Image 1 (cartoon, rainbow, N blue to C red):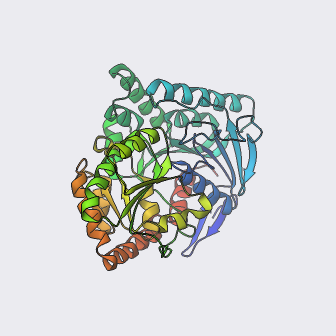
Image 2: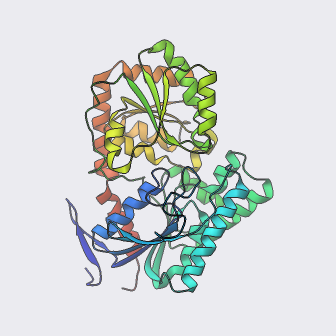
Image 3: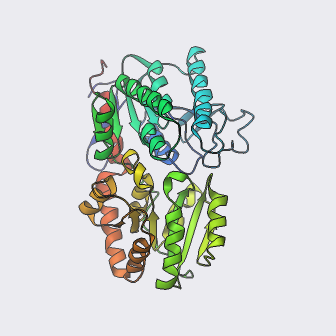
Length: 418
């Protein structure tokens, strides 16, 4: 092993990691949902392995689209947390969720990234990871790559596909966004996607760089199976952002059907986001006495929060399923809990369900079928336990922090001149 790489010893073999790593991403800790937890865990894993790790990111504002208290004045724009140096830039959080607001948010932020590079605030690195969303993070990350280095782009969302599927922006705007995606991704040395379906979409888009499938990962030591609280009713849990792409209207309709099947069960929606008021109004209009809302669990209590769910929910809008892979699915599996998801045949989740049998799939926009699947699992505690064990075993083998770190480190080191 070259002497300018440091080694992380996992349970199986030593893993070489670059001595210095830069991560460019618009979302990071303390944001509790979306891509921030995964990116935070990846950065802290590199730091724990001995790499000098820097993150270039925004002042935290997701999912509420308001800069968090204590960050707006810039007093925490340069901090070190868990061994990771964090450089934050100002932005204008998007209001309303439209494409124009998103472009302003991302444009202001990434102009700040480039200014930070021009002023020398963040140096060039030989190992650079960028995360989409936003595709602009991928585009500017090349400016931070040192000669002879490697830039690996991680695609969590294919933004043009999601925007088109969700009706955001006109045809000209989507065409321009596709061109930006194609150009930015073809300048990376490698591209990581979360599913085979996403790889197919990028190939159709015209991406010709090497595309590698690496599933969302989770800190399997921090997120682990815990006993359910003894003093609660049977609980069906959704935890995450309240955003349009989640298809949460299906969950409320599911709760209405579940009232007849399991009147003793509650449906707990834990999160926040742009459509929170709309969801609460809809639940009130439908007189869903079995639905409750709560804030997201803090990171240090995530495993406890997940343990409250006897059955979890992973709803998706069907038209966007090929363009994103829900990271929450892997987190639920790590917690040893089954879930019910909505997906189409051949999608990433449908393929994973056939592989490991740790959750149930139902068609999108079929809340009655979703309620039946939830009730089926609530009625079968032994089956839930067996599914939870299978899910946990799959995470430990395929999506643990150590397993995924080794793959990212290998991509960053491949073909370098070190």
